[in-house]
Image (tube, rainbow, N blue to C red; front, side, top):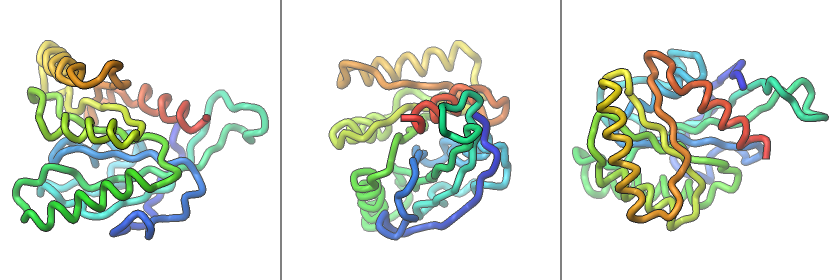
Length: 211
């Protein structure tokens, strides 16, 4: 799959103010400073699409982008394999620097979106490959399981590590997850700088959108 066009649509304070759920929707979420905006821009091949900020917690609304993509192997009746879907940039979780009431409001907004957005196909949970397993990531993923939300994991910023460090941290994270999960989720390793993982993630999205 190749993304031909990515257009910002709207930022919404709640799931029921988001665009009409009339096409597949893929969401991205992670802790602060995990490289979410950089990954989205890399996937869409547009460095200015999602706003990148050095200030943690800058994304505070549900941000929708309309994506026009092409499938290199279209199914019969798909019209040259052109597909329209939504990419969603969600606020992060685990904001220690914000007030408890603000954090709770964001958490409730995210939970409502994840549990009630009927056209949500998959959530990509971004995990920083530079660190040992973080409890906030484990807890969030376990909540997705409890809510029966389909998800995958993207380990980000692998260009910042030696390959051995990435392998160690990814293995440790998956081992920690295996304490709670009988079957581990699909996962990818990525770099917004080198574009590692781009094809694999886009092909996976294309497969999800085809169902």
